[in-house]
Image 1 (cartoon, rainbow, N blue to C red):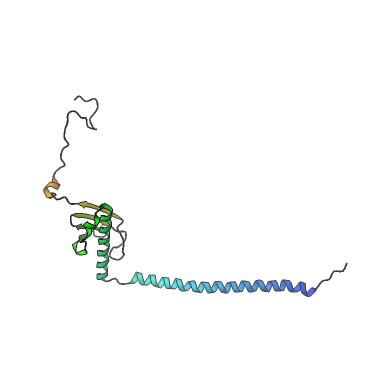
Image 2: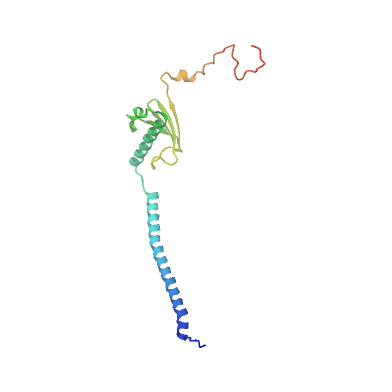
Length: 174
């Protein structure tokens, strides 16, 4: 039995496979470098945009309009949640119809709209960012409510000798 061996073939196969692996590796590095450069452009653009937004000067007119928009949207949202006929209650809602005060050093606002007194707490500055409040309380002023009736104590419950109240001991004589 005679073995035929081709020495050139034995040497060329590992050499070609090594060259092929080196080629694939370097082309992969170039592709990764190209993708990295494209991504760094996006990162740079993002950083520039973020820096611009952080450092921009906001006009007083923009702040006023944004606050009015936030407050009117908050009232619409509150009325929609509380009343089935909310549309009749907000049909004449305009920023001019609102009376409001901001609690100093917070994002808390106290509003008066018609007979409604509303408290809103915003997460961030409502003069800069459009948003709905994260907390709210609403009270309705009654028609006969004035300073005298608000200061009086609540009426005593009616006393009936035949009933025992929840705080009355069972063993007490009638």
